[in-house]
Image (cartoon, rainbow, N blue to C red; front, side, top):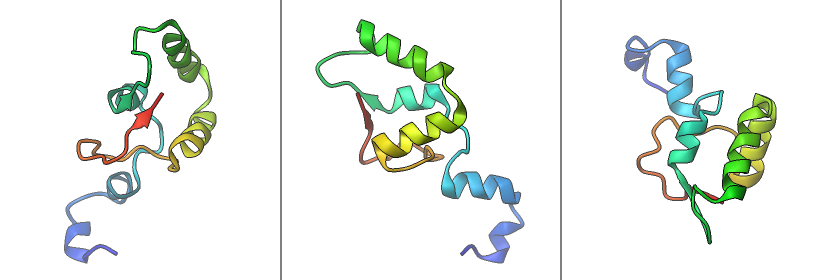
Length: 87
């Protein structure tokens, strides 16, 4: 629930994005919050992962995110994340 005074400051769709996260997954944003275990972003398999991830549908990206991270959308502000996406 948001106070009605705040609803006049933003459009409903902007409020939805800020509260629930963006509907579409921004790959660059996901890359920025990804930590690598036993590899780095220049490893061949990681490059292949990002290539495939870029080519799959938005629905499949959402399903992957829900499976791997327990949430179907990326948060609007990723600066204070406690748990990051790990590959």
